[in-house]
Length: 178
Image (cartoon, rainbow, N blue to C red):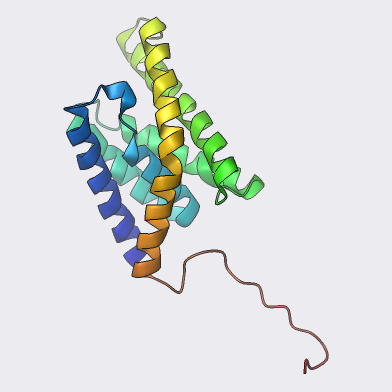
């Protein structure tokens, strides 16, 4: 429970930081910190707890950004599930696979927003401006991913030091070890 609450607080802080930076820096060059926290939620919180944290962060992003209610929540719940799925195949706790995954997830999220908004508006929303912004956003998110991963892991290590990292497997031997 403490892990979920701490990830919610980190996500809310990420949303506020991201909104503050967007006042001074062009949107394409501001990392989507809350999205990256959702990716780390997919690595740290499996099951219903992780889904609820991802959806709550998404709904908070909807409220703060003025997007359609549930838009971020739906897409970020999908990103959370995709992160868990990919993490079972690849170890996303290492930096190179994490960078590749964040690059791909950012592209999938951008395409999801474009298709969702295009379906609701009734007109295509994919254009050259969206593609150039998405390319910069993919690069910036990829560069910020190790920072967010490290910060999240450090906070979770402080909150619940017994649960951080991989679970250790104890192998019992049949004969006593000296």
